[in-house]
Figure 1 (spheres, rainbow, N blue to C red):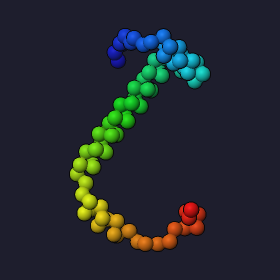
Figure 2: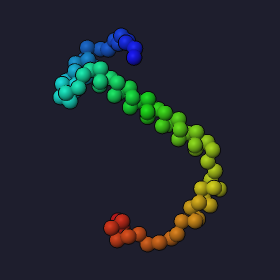
Figure 3: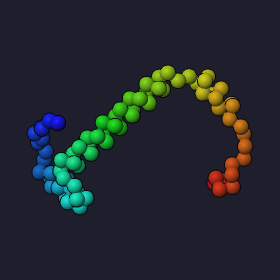
Amino acid sequence: MQTMSLRMPDYLKSAVSDVCGAEKISLNQFIINALSEKVSALQTVDIIEQKASKASKKDFLNALNQVPSNEPYEDDKL
C-alpha cells in the first residue's frame, strides 16, 4: 500500500468530513470508495465501447427475430 498527499479546497474537505462523520467512516475510506467507484465506471464505459465496436446491426436484428412474440404477463403490462 502507498501513501500519497492530497490537496483539496477547504470547502470540499469540510463537506467530505461532514459526510464521513454522518456515515461513520474515515476520510481515507471515503476517498478509496470514491476513487474505486470512478475507476469502475470508467472501465465499464471502456468495456461497453469495445463490445459496441464489434457489434453488428445484422446480428442484432437476427437475434431479435428469434425472440417469440408473446403477450406480456399481466403484472408486466403498463
